[in-house]
Length: 242
Ligand SMILES: Nc1ncnc2c1ncn2[C@@H]1O[C@H](COP(=O)(O)OP(=O)(O)OP(=O)(O)O)[C@@H](O)[C@H]1O
Image (cartoon, rainbow, N blue to C red; front, side, top):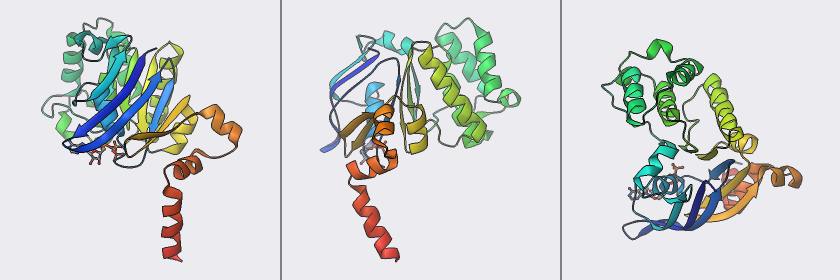
């Protein structure tokens, strides 16, 4: 098992953002789906040991609090968090040396795949949101981590980069890696995820697989709206618009 999350609870003061969450990720794509504020980012931050939490999180059998874990995990935050005064070339070489990466050919291939060649020496501050996101994704892949934790990774990406990222995710799983990502985009979740966890108000309200959804003959959107109780809200809103 690549990731095991047991009884995860994240609190901000007295507010419970994530409430006794349990799930695991094998060599597969697992998608966390949930409305705004459901607790997706807090869950991913807890897995990255960035916020205090209760419960247990294991990555490749190790506690996520162990330093060595960082060698096996790649993380893309919801908002790219990069040194604005540095260039992509500088940040990439910094992270590559920090992680002891020697094979630079793979990094050059990723730079080409995301069409970043012309921007390698441009300060991050001058890049568009989408290009910052591409650099952030690239940085998460530099050390060939076994587990990828991606928070809304498709945000701000253009059509070509969405396609590249989908292919990278699938190749990663084919090579025995695991991917956990959060998204709002149902079509993406339906197409590339093996399993899907739907969370609402910090609680896992349903776990399913894309095979189950296909067999049930329902769209993920319908399932999502019904298990989160949002279908009633949609009806009310539509009534108000009549
Ligand atoms: N640092 C913080 N301090 C206080 N409350 C927080 C903090 N971070 C998140 N929250 C609250 O915790 C809840 C869960 O937030 P979180 O960002 O995990 O949700 P999310 O599912 O990722 O939402 P979105 O889809 O809008 O990004 C929200 O109510 C949010 O306002």
